Amino acid sequence: MPLFRLGDRGAVVAEIRAKLALLDLLDAPPETDEFDASTDRAVRGFQQARGLRVDGVVGPETYRCLDEAHWRLGDRVLSYVAAKPFVGDDVAVLQQRLLELGFDPGRCDGIFGVATDAALRDFQRNIGLRADGTLGPGTLRALDQLRRTVTGGSPSERREEERLRRSGATLTGRVIVLDPGHGGGDTGVCGHGLVEAAVMLDLAARIEGRLGALGVTTYLTRSADASPGEAERARFANDVAADLVVSLHLDALEGSSACGSASFYYGATLPGRVTRSAVGEKLADLISREVASRTDLVDGRTHPKAWELLRLTRMPAVRMEAGYLSHPGDAARLASGDFRDALAEAVVAALQRLYLPEHLDIPTGQFRMPALSH
Ligand SMILES: [Zn+2]
Image 1 (tube, rainbow, N blue to C red):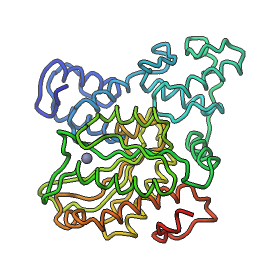
Image 2: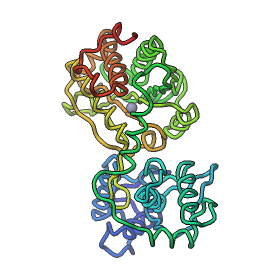
Image 3: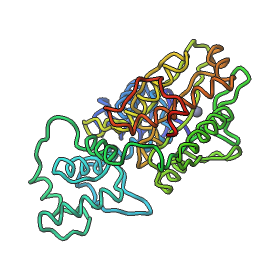
């Protein structure tokens, strides 16, 4: 789809404005078809709340999120459709309700998947309804009657952490998907003689080698000449049932002095509440800390985002942005093989630490490869 931004006009702009008005983000009556300043403000507010890139531009991702956001619970009959799952805020509310009642629909991501189906059937069985996995009027009424307020912490975050804790203390035997960004005709950002797609593929290979030595099964989402879309990469990770996904990117911001690395995990505000991947956040934090202790990159810390890859993966996923190619200092570092090795070791150490019980934890930056493999 084309991009829509400040100053544009037309039927699609009118539709965007109508959607924003429906979400109470736009006060003005939605009669005009102009993407005016108030539309721009509303779009930015929406992007901010949903963990999208805040640029005021309505492209495919923002448009899709706007579209999903208008569904209210009860607007449509929900069930699990493998070929094209229901996605929307009504699904997120359903997931939240099921969680509050003690059922496990997976992450509250607004996608009606297998786990939500199982939780809904569980719920129906529990209250003596036919367990058909369909949210029709009867089940909805029962849900409403049983509604209660849960305070303190989020059940979905606790469950994700509980699963991690139960899964054991070692990286050996895990399946990890490495996702070097871009590829093929899509080079990503470029600067100071370096190309993001190539540097990230090289970094992925360095991480892959180290993980292999530790008995980890590693998959890459792409080869040098392929450039799958974000949804395709997520599907790949889901298909191989990965334990974790690490996506590798670089940044560039021309005419700015921006530099350093940052890590991102799934998080967004869905119907009035914040949802996030607790394990994703923990891994992002570990990666950030290991990178900060092993390199002299500026520490840009961790941030929640609802980017497609982070959202559509069913396992915790982290996107690392390992520096700015527009920054001469970062680019000089990234040109060095030793520096890439240090980055690779930081990622591997973070992955190891994720599975370590707290009492066995050792200080950040202290892991060295030989000690890791025993
Ligand atoms: Zn990138």
